[in-house]
Amino acid sequence: QWQLVESGGGFVRPGESLRLSCTASGFSLDRWAIGWFRQAPGKEREGISCIASSGGSMMYGDSVKGRFTISRDSGKNTVYLQMNSLKPEDTAVYYCAAGNIFTMRAPAYDYWGQGTQVTVSS
Image (cartoon, rainbow, N blue to C red):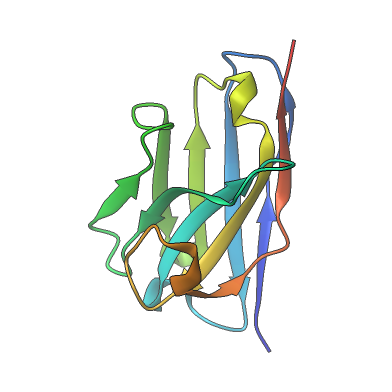
């Protein structure tokens, strides 16, 4: 049995912050590269950030560089996405995924969570 569950989404105003969590059950996240992706209605899935299994390397999409931070807490079997200075264009369903390759390419990931909605609006 295994499961990835995203949490922490919600409704916020522009400029505010959210911290998303990706928690694994049934397997250890620290053995996998973890990616965060988002998808808005009518748009393709976009790579936001990823973190290597070691936790020592991270990548960020151009649209979120300088605003979002990915991190691991191995003790909680959780990967976080801290999102600061949120903009309306950040509105989307956010997904975490686990894979063997440190990459921003969605097809490389094997296991996906159900997603959590983030809405940024005045």
